Amino acid sequence: MMNLDSKIPAGPLAEKWTNYKASQKLVNPANKRKLDIIVVGTGLAGASAAASLGAMGFNVDIFCIQDSPRRAKTVDHFHKALGKIMWEYCGMARNTESLTKAKQLVSELENEFWKSVFIPGTANEMNPELEKAYRLEDYFELAQLVIDDAMHREESCGGHFRTEHQTQDGETLRDDDRFMYVAAWEYQGHGQPETMEKEPLVYEHIQIAKRNYK
Amino acid sequence: MKFTLHIWRQENARAKGHFETYPLEGISPECSFLEMLDILNEQLISDHIAHPVCFDNDCREGICGMCGLYINGRPHGNDDGITTCQLHMRKFKDGDDIWIEPWRAKPFPVIRDLVVDRSAFDKIIQAGGYISTTTGGVPDANTIPIPKHKADMAMDAASCIGCGACVAACKNASAMLFVGAKVSHLTLLPQGQIEAADRVHKMVCKMDELGFGSCTNTYACEAECPKLIKRQNISRLNRHWIGALLGRDRK
Ligand code: SF4
Ligand code: FES
Image: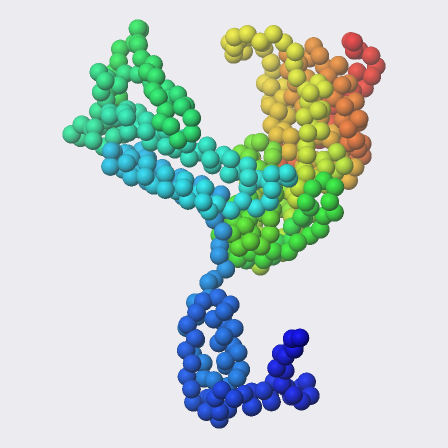
């Protein structure tokens, strides 16, 4: 037979805790406040140890790291971050270095998106956050393709200004011998590089000229 | 700026709705009303406070008609001739309480929170708000002579963006300003006159069938219309409607 003994101190309920603190054998009650106890810990365990030792009369110093409530990352957070990368590194003036950087940053951001985006609600109700997330998923793919295309086009043409390809006074430098075509990219499945089809630009009635923006 | 928002929350069409209060701080006076709601939602989501507030919007430049909200008792807020997306927070006073509700009209049931189903308007347009014609190449400008004042009236009527503020403002939930604008813009032009009687008949019948109320000439619609559509479009609608009832060329 087993006896359950929870060692509840004797005496009326209102005085039990005071009695217990005074009669607890481990350290003489009078000496408790002379002892410094340092609690190192995080979260609830550290906090409860510090609190109960403090209540018993020990001099407690705590070194606890309590996490601030974690802020969730929204779809908009990622959308804005993606926009910022494209604006900075695949913007109006781009070059091999900035495009390489953009490519890496976008893929890092996409991984982070899949790992930690927070979408409230479910798919069985009106859920604009989920709609936005679906769109953003496409934007990630599109952003990478835009970067690939910009990287491939080694000339400056229209809104695509490659800083490596400019005249001495900063005008665009086209390379009609190599790039007189429209690049159409064909989807090859998720994560696969797209393949390029060239649509040559053939002008029969107009003279190809260079525009001067000055 | 600092605001206390009282927002209508309703989980779906069948659920019971209620007002929920959210304090919001640090809003720039240059912020648009919808951007202010974006900021609120960002906080509601990232601090795990509540499901974000659903509201409709699309163009955010006053042309699509998606963004209608009832703000402090007025459709599209306390300013004339603008949509909700064109309203700015500088129009409010720091510390204001702002009450935000969806359109309230039986033919526009709430889908969630501030989003209502306005497909009743699409059904009215489908009933007759078009011109049946064979399309071809774009004709040269001015091949059909149209008097300037008629072209202007048609253009003014055509600026209706189908937002539904007129219905929401009306104590009878009447759609007369909307239908008046659509009928006018087509019927004022020669291309639209051929089907005029048939069109007005079909559109008015559809409007009644969908549960929109009758017009009692209060003109709250005209006062709240973000595109300043004039009440004269309602008179024109009535004239054409009576003409159609008298049986002129109706099939
Ligand atoms: S008439 Fe005015 S208020 Fe009514 S739907 Fe058109 S634009 Fe909106
Ligand atoms: S969002 Fe298009 S009119 Fe306001």
